[in-house]
Each structure stands twice: as structure tokens, then as C-alpha cells.
Image 1 (cartoon, one colour):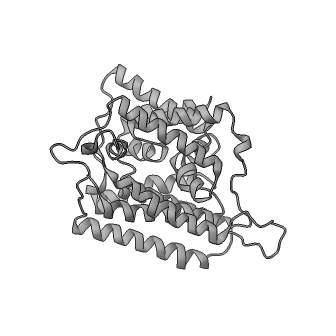
Image 2 (cartoon, rainbow, N blue to C red):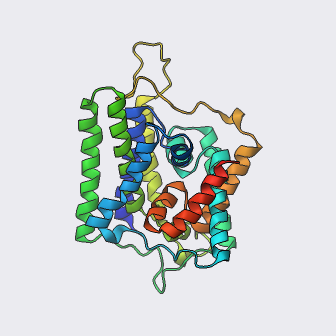
Image 3 (cartoon, rainbow, N blue to C red):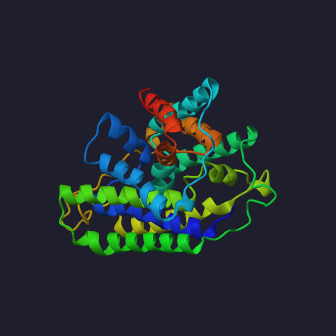
Length: 326
């Protein structure tokens, strides 16, 4: 169902987590690379973010469990397990070779006005849209059209509003007072992951059915849930304004007047351009789009679901990591 309040405020948490990591730590919030690097090359730059992302489930479970998605049943046969592992492999191979997913390319890349991310997003979004519709994979909302709005309960409203407020206080008041150090960056990495994970859960990005219903436009309006369009307005929009105001990496580092991240000495933003696009990049974006359209999950939401549904998670994330090796 259409959740304008949930998604708008959840998108603000996505913005605060991703833009906060850029402004304070000087890094881009690319979930796909963070997950794989935390396994194959763990360190301060990735493990705390992934830990924060996973930890976001706990406060939701304890204080507003109705915000947790109702996931489809885990695989119960060899055939369904193989299919699930295959989708995980496509996610891993696709995001590795396409150099990102919905977080790195769509949320962070588009807000940095990256032509390369625009191309990747266009490819994987279009592919997912076609895949979901051709495969008739879009769930219905019963007798009620999916575009019918629903609003948070009083408990959900308090939790969501409190999360957004605490996140804003952390990002704009507390963190700027911290010393520029490795310890500060590590602490904020965890907090950024926590904020982003809450954003995924509250906005509905972690709900595979809700994502697939967004792909119903324009073929079946009764199944169309427009909620995730609000991520563009309240997630990408503020991130774009933040990028334009800070211009990270645009001023030569040797310039003493150049702005620096709050907690780091330098910016670590992607430098690849359209000229660096090759067949693997295109094929990777296509593969990720197919996986996204088949199951409605991308790496961040897949990790959250893996914690909530361990059997599904073991199969999917094993396939994901295997795909990252190729």
C-alpha cells in the first residue's frame, strides 16, 4: 500500500546516513562494495557500517515491530534454494561488475551528478521493470488497489519521528564537535549504517513486495504502489543539495582553503567517468537489474532480510559472495 509518511521520513534517514558518511567521513555509501569488502577485506572503513546497518533491525523489532517487512517464505525445496542462490549470484556478480547498486549509483551517484551512475541506474532500473512485468512477479494488494494511502499508527509515528530527529541531532550538532580521528570515523561509520538501515526499513525499500509493486507502473495500476518515488524527492533531493553546497573532491587537496570532511583529512569519492564504461559495467548493471526485478531486493535490503530470515540469508548471501569472486 502507498505509505507517503513512512517513505518520506524513511528517505530522510537514507539521506542522513549516506550524505552524513560523505560529509563527515568523506566516503560514498555503496552498500554492495561495503558488504563484499567487509568479508574479503574487513577493516575500519567497512565493518562498522555493515554492523550499524544490521543493528537497525533491533530498535525496530523492540519498539515498532510492525515496521518490519512480511517476507515471503524461505526456500523449502532444492529447486527453490537453487533459484534463490542464483538470484544471489546475479546480485553479487552484477553489483561487482556494474560497480554499484541502488545506494552507490542511484542514491549517491545521481546526487553527485555522475553521468556514469545515471547510465547504470537507467540500465538496471529499466531491466528490473521489464523483468518484473514479463515474469508476472508483481504481488497484488488484494481487493484494495496498491496506490491506496495508509498512514503510520501512533506508535510508528513516535518511533519514526524520533529516529529522524535523533539522526538530525547526531549529524548536525553532535558529530561536528568530534575530533578528526580514526576513532571518530569508526563511531560515525556505525551510526551512518544504523541510520541507513532504519531508512531502508521505514521507507519500505527493504520490503521486496513493495519494491516489486513500484515496478507495476504503467502496466497494472491496481498493483502500483508509488511510495518509492518519494525516495527520489526526500532521499536524492537533499543529498544533491548537500553535494552542491560542499562540492567534495572538487577543490584540489593542496589548496589550503579546500573544505575537508568533518572527521577525515581527505575525500574518497569515485573518480571513474563515462570513458571507463566497458562491457562488464553494462553487463553487470543488466544482471543486477534482472535480480532486482526477480525478487525486489538489492544488497542492503538483502542483508537485512538475511538477518530476519537466516535460511534465506545463508543461501542468498552465499550466492552473492560467490558472484563477487567472478
